[in-house]
Length: 112
Length: 112
Image (cartoon, rainbow over all chains, first blue to last red):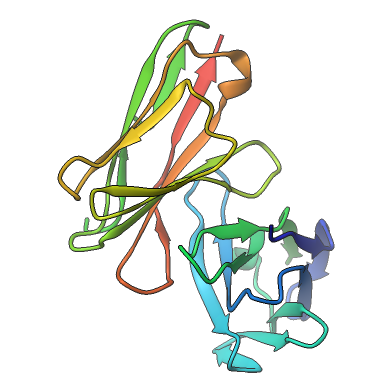
């Protein structure tokens, strides 16, 4: 089955810096890669996603890139703000029922 | 609120008792998923419904777990003879006939 690895586990940046979180997946048949933001005690919130027919997608300060050959994808956050502080999860979806296989999460701390 | 809702939000039970959780998906979302999340980990897939049909179950879902979605709307997850290892956040997600999954706030189960 699919296995998703995520790095780093924690990331501390200064406000205004950029943050990059990387994930690798094992199943070459996976074709959908969402990113979720989870604040303490709250639900995972879908912030951006990418499908395997696209190499990059941007939405304001966040962007996701996908390298199908290397089977890795990354989340980029520019001009970080303290409210970006949260745990971020990457995930990959199989091609059948679209169950999500999640990475172990990255705790992002943005200091003012 | 038109998002996914879950009840109860918190449940404390004694080992050996049965518990039932409810998930109300976003209206007209025909796909419904249950995940379990333990502290410091990403959500893990438990089971999936397409309308009222349960189409996939994880090996994590032991015989003590059962899920239903009788009319293709809300879903229930029951755990019989709870064990301390069942303590976790139980998350429900729904999806229209596509890949994006939207999560509920979860039910936090504590087994004492």
